[in-house]
Each structure stands twice: as C-alpha cells, then as structure tokens.
Image (cartoon, rainbow, N blue to C red; front, side, top):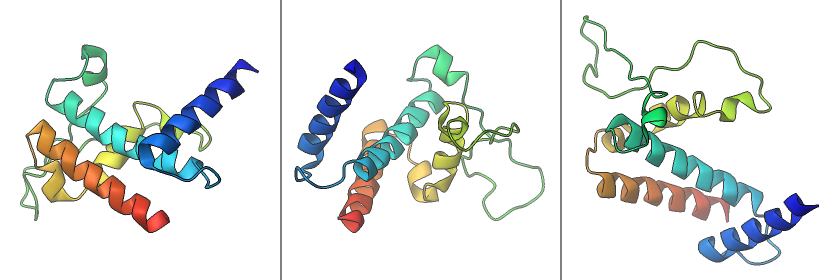
Length: 132
C-alpha cells in the first residue's frame, strides 16, 4: 500500500521533470532516465569520482596486444555470469558494461564529467523525443 503511494509520487515527479502530460505513459520515460543515470554513474566509477564500493564493481576491459581498429577504446568487461531476464540484467554489476559499451565511442572517450553528462543527456533527450 505504501509502495503504490510512493510510486505515484515518483511518477508525478518524473512527469514534472520530463514535461510529460498527465495521461501519457510514464514507464518508457523512467526507463530512458535509468539508461541515462547508469552511464553517468559508470563514468564516475571509471574516473574514481563514485563511492569506493561502486568503483570496485566496474572492470575495464584490457585491450589485447594484437592490432585492432580501436585499441585505445575504453570498454568495460561484461560479467561472465548468466542472469535471469527479470531482475538480474538490472543489477549494478550487469547493467553498466552493457550500457557503457553501447555508447558511441566519441562519448566514451570524453574525460570531462560535465561534458560527458551533457552529451549523454542529449542522447537521452533525443531518444525521449523519438518516443513521443
């Protein structure tokens, strides 16, 4: 009962922040917002700005010694464990590598936090505009 009240407040706040009309679906907007927040948190973990326990969860993929097209690209190592599709793919150990590696390489290469956040926010806004 208390969870449903909290969910309504959270949905109302999401509608306000994203300027979504009252009777439009909010679930896709919340999903897009989560997909924005995870790469930002991942960026903080890579560069040591996030809390220590989160920094320990992010593993950078070591580049092989052979020549590839993008040997200096910053990618994350996906976990080797299999997860259930219902909840496991959203875990803090599973979700960041997938979302981070899907980002365009020019965005992953940014080392300035404010610039990175702005570019990821632009991607989020474009995806939201395509949905609307």
